[in-house]
Picture (tube, rainbow, N blue to C red):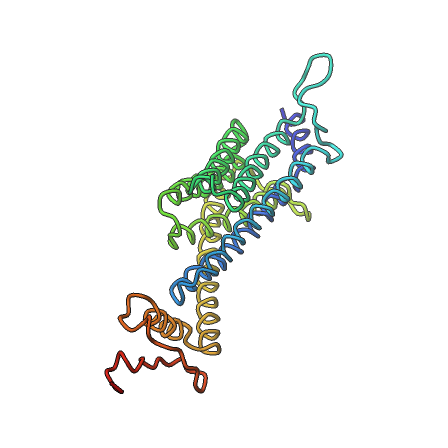
Length: 313
């Protein structure tokens, strides 16, 4: 039994990058969302300009493209590493399965890639139903959770436990993203998604360090219950750090927006004056058809027609 376990451990040692790579992807997206969504929320509070909405729609499309690229990198890495399956699902005379762990990771990347495709299509075509991008992302996260649940089934206790902690963030994220289908642009749900994504990223790295010791050191005792207790506590330290990151990024974004508003001036007030001018120039104003526009010192002024005022008759 020991020799068999050592052999499987040696196989797992070669797959450390299989945890580090998705961990880096999730961490990058989580950190980006922790800046993007406060910026979007605060900019909407400051100004309702339409070009800001279009800007963030373009950002969503770019995000989709990055998802596609990351997913392709992940799938190629899982398939074509030296000990990878190289697109063979089974081989040999007995038709044995080939590297099913790599295939599971490939399937996870596939669904995130499909989520990126829907993001891009949502920006390109008006025919894509509103909320489909969030639904596809929720499905991708749910698929990830199911794959990882059966990924570690019947493994040693420490291995199972450290992956089960990851499932907390995965299924919590899937549920919150599903709510975003119906509660669009909800800053609370968006920030929660950012937090669980950051935790996913950092915890993937933590799993790699605990199980594989890539930089050397003694292996963890998988039968010591104290290790289970520590890792559970450590997991929520990761989550506390993610919440702190969100708080810092939200505060920094707020101060940057406030500073830019002070530098650029009160845009909403100028917009309001333009709206008043447009009203007076429109047909809704009784003198709109007879008024004439005079530019003086950069200020638009309306002078009524003499016949309207009754002077000069």
